[in-house]
Amino acid sequence: MFCTLFFFFFFRYGQYAESAQANAGVRMCFSFADRDKEGVVLQFGWFDSAKDYVAQPESLTACYSSGSDDDYTAVFGEYDSNVVAKIQALGGSCSFNDGMGGYIRDPKGAADADAPAADMAAAFKTGQLPMIWLSKRKIKAGLLEQAKISFQKGVNRMFNNAPTAIAICEFEVPHESDTLWSLRVFNSFEGFKRHFPVPSAILFRMVFNVVPTWEAFPIGFSFSAPESIQGAIAANPGNSAYTQYHFGDGTDALIGPLPDFGKGF
Image (cartoon, rainbow, N blue to C red; front, side):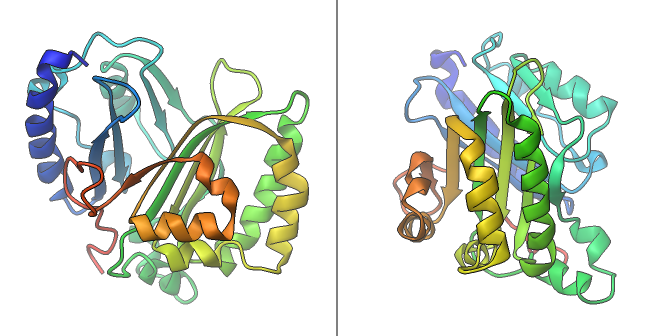
């Protein structure tokens, strides 16, 4: 991003995000200034489907630099040719999942289903701020398939045992060996605790079969209320590896509205 346009970005992105999230199928649309890189911003959006995607207007994208491989976008879940074209037009390195592991819950599809799916849909509406974790994970050489298989077995248990885990998913980063984009979204800190009960088969599966395949986290961000990430670190000190961004305590300047997973329920 051109530094001279940074303040224009704050205003224009805020306008875009408020307008986009006013749509029923947009549950998150926010940004933070990257505290470690001058003139760089982090953006996050949740669109219920490809049809719900809201592209950024030219008045906003004009604030961006031409884009390099240091700029990146990771797209989890469903997308179509329109989403691909709009995101690629922003420049930088674009990763679209091609065979995603794990799951992303569908609030629209689950809302009309019988229990327990209806209960899972109800987990979207808590009145609390979510916990969002995004990372790029480098896997030890030769262990990628083991990591993917073991991850899916653990996540299959989470789907029914932890309806408060709204998204637990990963996919291979295109053109990078032994590397995964990873996303975790929980409806609250209480939801975070339910995805990893102690003791449980889930715990043993992940600790003994998945964690040993990890080599490094070259990228890791968390977005949450400050007390939520503090609780997560108390439960597992390894969570301190994520760079923290906080909703609502004044530490970080949130650009755009707070996430709203409960709309429509």
